[in-house]
Length: 234
Ligand code: TMP
Ligand code: ASP
Image 1 (cartoon, helix red, strand yellow):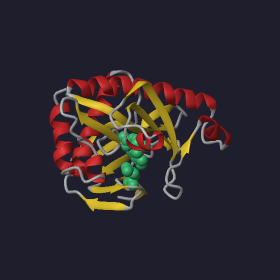
Image 2 (cartoon, rainbow, N blue to C red):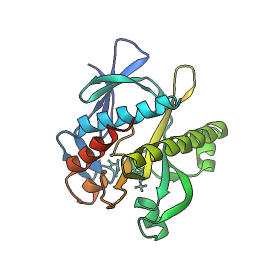
Image 3 (cartoon, rainbow, N blue to C red):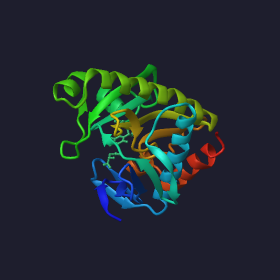
């Protein structure tokens, strides 16, 4: 199969139909813009399952995504989209770079969820963008920004509730958008513990990629705990 893109955790392959791609989830784990790296056997399979469950939830709620169906243990079929090079981060609780930037303690609740934008550029280390930057550099127009924010908050409302049913606190997460061949904006990429912070609601145990980033425990053990619980949430 011919790959058309290889990222740090995924590979996209062409299919016989130009409208669709195969998304392969790698076992590679990276952090700090690739500075930390490990091969974590089984991560691809767990991320594929997590993203399938999350996109199924969203589909049932009427949110359009690129997800079509599962193909194998670590592959899904997706619609081909033109990715908008913006990482959209939604936060419910203070953690990660927000805690660092503002000098605020991790775990503090935000009065209301917030959205942040980052420019997808490994060379530049994904710098933060505001809406003026996005517009002035023609990354996306005002209408697209508004639509991305609307969908991001909607996804947050839904995911928060679903994870809550699994006794998991959705601290923050990153999503990406793309345009299909008709120009329609749809949710793309993945929703996995690689790109979200997921804490046990009762104990605060970290179950996401921060385990790898900050050596907090076995990555697979955390991801398996997430999967065990969200599999039961329909
Ligand atoms: P941050 O607190 O490091 O800015 O991360 C916010 C959220 O975005 C967190 O859930 C992890 C996710 N994320 C990615 O998916 N990819 C990235 O490159 C970074 C920096 C964060
Ligand atoms: N995804 C980025 C990397 O692989 C950063 C991160 O997730 O911490 O380096």
